[in-house]
Image (cartoon, rainbow, N blue to C red; front, side, top):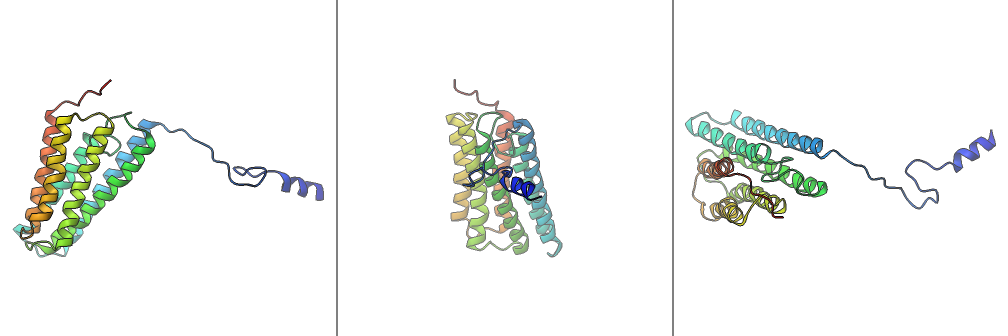
Length: 220
Protein backbone atom coordinates (compact mmCIF):
# COMPACT_ATOMS: atom_id res chain seq x y z
CA UNK A 1 0.00 0.00 0.00
CA UNK A 2 1.13 3.60 -0.55
CA UNK A 3 1.43 4.39 3.21
CA UNK A 4 3.58 1.28 3.68
CA UNK A 5 5.88 2.37 0.84
CA UNK A 6 6.12 5.85 2.32
CA UNK A 7 7.04 4.42 5.75
CA UNK A 8 9.70 2.23 4.16
CA UNK A 9 11.19 5.26 2.43
CA UNK A 10 11.24 7.17 5.72
CA UNK A 11 12.83 4.31 7.68
CA UNK A 12 16.60 5.00 8.01
CA UNK A 13 18.96 2.40 6.65
CA UNK A 14 21.43 0.76 9.07
CA UNK A 15 24.66 2.73 9.33
CA UNK A 16 23.23 5.84 7.66
CA UNK A 17 22.37 9.04 9.52
CA UNK A 18 18.65 10.05 9.41
CA UNK A 19 19.50 13.45 7.92
CA UNK A 20 21.37 11.73 5.07
CA UNK A 21 24.64 13.61 5.69
CA UNK A 22 26.82 10.52 5.78
CA UNK A 23 27.39 7.06 7.24
CA UNK A 24 27.59 6.37 10.95
CA UNK A 25 30.86 4.77 12.07
CA UNK A 26 30.54 2.29 14.92
CA UNK A 27 33.60 1.27 16.93
CA UNK A 28 34.27 -2.39 17.67
CA UNK A 29 36.52 -4.09 20.16
CA UNK A 30 38.88 -6.99 19.44
CA UNK A 31 40.55 -9.58 21.59
CA UNK A 32 44.25 -8.59 21.54
CA UNK A 33 45.43 -12.16 22.16
CA UNK A 34 43.31 -13.54 19.32
CA UNK A 35 44.34 -10.74 16.96
CA UNK A 36 48.04 -11.23 17.71
CA UNK A 37 47.68 -14.92 17.01
CA UNK A 38 46.11 -14.20 13.63
CA UNK A 39 48.81 -11.66 12.78
CA UNK A 40 51.50 -14.16 13.69
CA UNK A 41 49.85 -16.78 11.48
CA UNK A 42 49.77 -14.33 8.60
CA UNK A 43 53.52 -13.75 8.94
CA UNK A 44 54.03 -17.52 8.92
CA UNK A 45 52.01 -17.72 5.69
CA UNK A 46 54.10 -14.99 4.07
CA UNK A 47 57.30 -16.72 5.13
CA UNK A 48 56.00 -20.01 3.74
CA UNK A 49 55.17 -18.36 0.44
CA UNK A 50 58.68 -16.91 0.43
CA UNK A 51 60.15 -20.41 0.73
CA UNK A 52 57.90 -21.57 -2.13
CA UNK A 53 59.11 -18.67 -4.26
CA UNK A 54 62.75 -19.63 -3.66
CA UNK A 55 61.98 -23.29 -4.46
CA UNK A 56 60.27 -22.31 -7.71
CA UNK A 57 63.29 -20.25 -8.73
CA UNK A 58 65.61 -23.15 -7.87
CA UNK A 59 63.49 -25.57 -9.91
CA UNK A 60 64.51 -23.90 -13.18
CA UNK A 61 68.15 -23.30 -12.21
CA UNK A 62 71.03 -25.64 -12.95
CA UNK A 63 71.64 -27.92 -10.01
CA UNK A 64 75.00 -27.77 -8.26
CA UNK A 65 76.69 -27.30 -4.91
CA UNK A 66 76.35 -23.53 -5.28
CA UNK A 67 72.60 -23.79 -5.78
CA UNK A 68 72.32 -26.03 -2.73
CA UNK A 69 74.32 -23.55 -0.66
CA UNK A 70 72.11 -20.69 -1.83
CA UNK A 71 68.95 -22.60 -0.97
CA UNK A 72 70.22 -23.49 2.50
CA UNK A 73 71.34 -19.92 3.23
CA UNK A 74 67.99 -18.56 1.99
CA UNK A 75 66.07 -21.00 4.17
CA UNK A 76 68.20 -20.10 7.21
CA UNK A 77 67.56 -16.40 6.58
CA UNK A 78 63.78 -16.89 6.35
CA UNK A 79 63.72 -19.30 9.29
CA UNK A 80 65.64 -16.74 11.34
CA UNK A 81 63.02 -14.13 10.54
CA UNK A 82 60.39 -16.62 11.69
CA UNK A 83 62.23 -17.00 14.98
CA UNK A 84 62.56 -13.27 15.55
CA UNK A 85 58.99 -12.43 14.51
CA UNK A 86 57.03 -15.37 15.92
CA UNK A 87 59.11 -17.18 18.55
CA UNK A 88 60.77 -14.15 20.16
CA UNK A 89 58.30 -11.54 18.92
CA UNK A 90 54.60 -10.86 19.25
CA UNK A 91 51.90 -10.49 16.59
CA UNK A 92 54.53 -11.27 13.97
CA UNK A 93 56.67 -8.27 15.01
CA UNK A 94 60.26 -8.79 16.16
CA UNK A 95 61.20 -7.65 19.69
CA UNK A 96 57.59 -6.76 20.53
CA UNK A 97 56.03 -7.70 23.86
CA UNK A 98 52.35 -8.28 24.55
CA UNK A 99 50.23 -5.32 25.53
CA UNK A 100 52.97 -2.71 25.10
CA UNK A 101 51.71 -0.76 22.04
CA UNK A 102 48.22 0.13 20.75
CA UNK A 103 46.49 -2.32 18.44
CA UNK A 104 46.37 0.14 15.54
CA UNK A 105 50.12 0.72 15.78
CA UNK A 106 50.70 -3.04 15.81
CA UNK A 107 48.56 -3.42 12.67
CA UNK A 108 50.52 -0.73 10.83
CA UNK A 109 53.89 -2.20 11.80
CA UNK A 110 52.65 -5.69 10.92
CA UNK A 111 51.75 -4.50 7.42
CA UNK A 112 55.26 -3.11 6.97
CA UNK A 113 56.93 -6.28 8.26
CA UNK A 114 55.02 -8.54 5.89
CA UNK A 115 55.89 -6.25 2.99
CA UNK A 116 59.56 -6.39 3.93
CA UNK A 117 59.49 -10.19 4.16
CA UNK A 118 57.90 -10.39 0.71
CA UNK A 119 60.64 -8.10 -0.63
CA UNK A 120 63.31 -10.36 0.85
CA UNK A 121 61.69 -13.32 -0.91
CA UNK A 122 61.85 -11.57 -4.28
CA UNK A 123 65.51 -10.76 -3.70
CA UNK A 124 66.36 -14.33 -2.72
CA UNK A 125 64.75 -15.60 -5.92
CA UNK A 126 66.96 -13.21 -7.85
CA UNK A 127 70.02 -14.61 -6.06
CA UNK A 128 69.03 -18.14 -7.08
CA UNK A 129 68.69 -17.04 -10.69
CA UNK A 130 72.08 -15.24 -10.79
CA UNK A 131 73.96 -18.16 -9.25
CA UNK A 132 77.55 -17.29 -8.36
CA UNK A 133 77.46 -13.92 -10.12
CA UNK A 134 77.28 -10.70 -8.10
CA UNK A 135 73.85 -9.13 -7.96
CA UNK A 136 73.15 -5.98 -9.95
CA UNK A 137 73.22 -2.80 -7.90
CA UNK A 138 69.42 -2.65 -7.74
CA UNK A 139 69.14 -6.28 -6.65
CA UNK A 140 71.88 -5.97 -4.05
CA UNK A 141 70.34 -2.85 -2.53
CA UNK A 142 66.89 -4.41 -2.61
CA UNK A 143 68.06 -7.41 -0.59
CA UNK A 144 70.27 -5.54 1.86
CA UNK A 145 67.79 -2.69 2.20
CA UNK A 146 64.94 -5.09 2.94
CA UNK A 147 66.93 -6.83 5.68
CA UNK A 148 67.94 -3.46 7.14
CA UNK A 149 64.29 -2.33 7.02
CA UNK A 150 63.24 -5.51 8.85
CA UNK A 151 65.66 -4.82 11.68
CA UNK A 152 64.69 -1.14 11.68
CA UNK A 153 61.11 -2.16 12.38
CA UNK A 154 62.42 -4.46 15.11
CA UNK A 155 64.26 -1.55 16.72
CA UNK A 156 61.10 0.58 16.54
CA UNK A 157 58.94 -2.11 18.15
CA UNK A 158 61.58 -2.81 20.79
CA UNK A 159 61.85 0.84 21.79
CA UNK A 160 58.09 1.47 21.59
CA UNK A 161 57.28 -1.56 23.74
CA UNK A 162 60.10 -0.83 26.22
CA UNK A 163 61.53 -4.32 25.63
CA UNK A 164 64.93 -2.98 24.59
CA UNK A 165 67.38 -1.07 26.77
CA UNK A 166 70.01 1.30 25.39
CA UNK A 167 72.70 -1.37 25.03
CA UNK A 168 70.43 -3.73 23.11
CA UNK A 169 69.14 -0.92 20.93
CA UNK A 170 72.68 0.11 19.95
CA UNK A 171 73.59 -3.52 19.27
CA UNK A 172 70.51 -4.06 17.11
CA UNK A 173 71.11 -0.87 15.15
CA UNK A 174 74.77 -1.74 14.57
CA UNK A 175 74.38 -5.36 13.56
CA UNK A 176 70.90 -5.31 12.04
CA UNK A 177 70.87 -1.99 10.19
CA UNK A 178 74.42 -0.75 9.70
CA UNK A 179 75.91 -4.09 8.63
CA UNK A 180 73.34 -4.82 5.85
CA UNK A 181 73.64 -1.25 4.57
CA UNK A 182 77.42 -1.54 4.48
CA UNK A 183 77.07 -4.80 2.55
CA UNK A 184 74.80 -3.04 0.08
CA UNK A 185 77.36 -0.27 -0.31
CA UNK A 186 80.60 -2.24 -0.41
CA UNK A 187 79.77 -5.79 -1.53
CA UNK A 188 79.71 -4.90 -5.22
CA UNK A 189 81.88 -7.83 -6.30
CA UNK A 190 80.57 -10.38 -3.78
CA UNK A 191 78.62 -13.32 -5.17
CA UNK A 192 74.90 -13.23 -4.49
CA UNK A 193 74.93 -16.46 -2.52
CA UNK A 194 77.80 -15.20 -0.36
CA UNK A 195 75.80 -12.06 0.36
CA UNK A 196 72.87 -14.19 1.49
CA UNK A 197 75.21 -16.15 3.79
CA UNK A 198 76.40 -12.90 5.39
CA UNK A 199 72.85 -11.72 5.96
CA UNK A 200 71.81 -15.11 7.32
CA UNK A 201 74.67 -14.89 9.83
CA UNK A 202 73.37 -11.50 10.94
CA UNK A 203 69.92 -12.98 11.56
CA UNK A 204 71.39 -15.97 13.40
CA UNK A 205 73.41 -13.62 15.62
CA UNK A 206 70.21 -11.82 16.60
CA UNK A 207 68.54 -15.14 17.36
CA UNK A 208 71.47 -16.17 19.53
CA UNK A 209 71.28 -12.94 21.51
CA UNK A 210 67.51 -13.32 21.95
CA UNK A 211 68.00 -16.80 23.39
CA UNK A 212 70.86 -15.71 25.60
CA UNK A 213 69.46 -12.47 27.03
CA UNK A 214 66.36 -12.19 29.20
CA UNK A 215 63.69 -9.65 28.13
CA UNK A 216 64.42 -6.14 29.31
CA UNK A 217 62.21 -4.96 32.14
CA UNK A 218 59.92 -2.04 31.24
CA UNK A 219 60.67 1.30 32.84
CA UNK A 220 58.09 2.37 35.39
